[in-house]
Image (cartoon, rainbow, N blue to C red):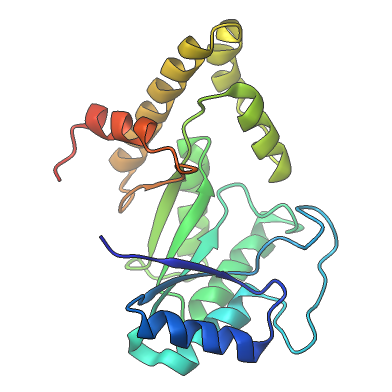
Length: 223
């Protein structure tokens, strides 16, 4: 199992970020997911620049790549429906391209809610010049609690698809049934993504791995 550190620009100077990556490398961590991070006030609030720091993920990617050459693999975030702060899908795609050009080697997406959204992201990226061998890995978060997932999607400026709500809302008074159906929905989504050619799956477990193990078992994937 390979560890991957998540590193954000929030509250850090360039020098601090450089030292952090060096310390990670010395500790044997050679994979870093480079993120701008949410503003200190939370998603949707204005960005606050740190004096001597960085404002964009592409700048963090470049900093890591320049200082560490081939010693650190740098990943970035990608957004199936566009980042909430991006004015358009086209601009969101340009931002992904900038991260690739800065030295990113792979991307992990925000949680995918529809396979068609992931397919659209990949299509836009390839059309904009992101190489075919640049892995765009879909992020998966099974819906185990409808209220919690609704809140999480709202924070990212999105909505749970109507077809998913139609399967879960009739079960709202039965938490066990919601969980079971949420796992079925996630399993179906994973099957569709893999059939589309996704290079792998990234699970957001929130430190609860049981549902992920159930989905993995249902997919009957090789170890």
